Each structure stands twice: as structure tokens, then as C-alpha cells.
Length: 107
Image (cartoon, rainbow, N blue to C red; front, side, top):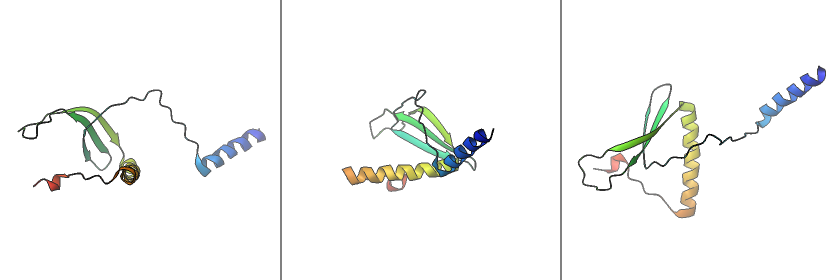
């Protein structure tokens, strides 16, 4: 009994020091998206991903086929921002600066 408690205490101590993460990709699916839109409420951030297959710039109306919706907490969204920022910075160090037009740039 004392050995079991000691082992449990050691596991909890190890978890506090830094848990080992095991990535289980057995149910993972891959999808491609070239369009993303994000909305939020106080409790969640909703990311919509889809595909724009219309390549003509002069079109009056473009239909985006939405394929995936990911819903996360604002805390997870903030961690995602940090991770994506690091990935983009590393990409730009290797391949050069990315110039992206935002909605404000289109006047």
C-alpha cells in the first residue's frame, strides 16, 4: 500500500515537472483550404475553412465551398496565434518575407 502511494506521488510530481505528450494520429484527417474566416463570442473562437475555386478576379460573386469548422476556446486561440507566429517567422527566415494584402489594403 505504501509503495502504491509512493508511485502515485511520483507520477503526480512528474506530471507537474512536465508531462510527456503522446500524439495519437490514428483518427486524424487531412484537408486543404485556401480560404479561412474567423468569428468569435466570449466563450469560443470559430474558424471556417473552405476552398475558393473561382480564379477570375472580375467576378461579381464568388462562392466559397466551406469544408471544415474548428471551434476552440479563446485561450487555445491565443496559444494558436503564438504557434502560428513562430511558424511564419521561421518560414520568412528561410524563404523571404510574405506580403499579404488584408481587407484594409483593398481600396
